[in-house]
Length: 209
Image (cartoon, rainbow, N blue to C red; front, side, top):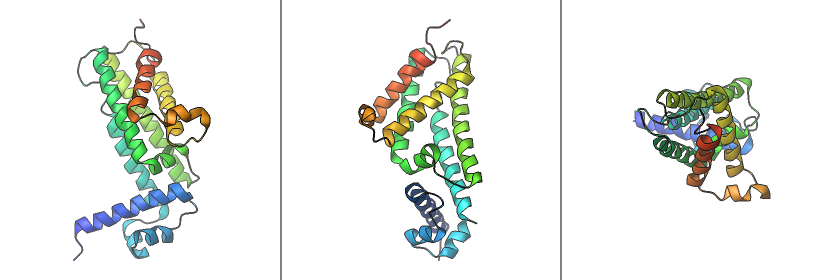
């Protein structure tokens, strides 16, 4: 008898395998037959869970988006506190973010490094990146409301913060250039410290009126 847990496990295996193959071979070069062969299931099993390769790619992106937004949703603080409290919370947020990214390189390739895909998949990727930026903006707005951060333009600051994170992430995970040698050997904790230093003492202008 096939249990619900077994069905869910099979679906997760298909999702994870598809993501890995998309990252390694590219979306268009990965066939449904490649996915089912790697998982070890019949092609009918794939289509029982997913209508098409496009649908599985969209679900992969949706799942990744939800996980990343969970980290950002931690925010700076949910109640009044000092800038030091906010810095500590932000360090944890980014350390978790970078650790997750390192452990999920295939997802990062899909979301940030970029591969050629269907238009719907490409739009889902752009939407995910926009939602991440909006989540950072919400954190900044909340910190302003609590008096933790000075008056700043949240739209501009969240865009700059997102660009900073994307740039560091891509150099840390994927760059082979010698100019990025020092960055590639940093830990997630050290990267988080770099981001927070810029975030609070540069980007967000701690101490500004």
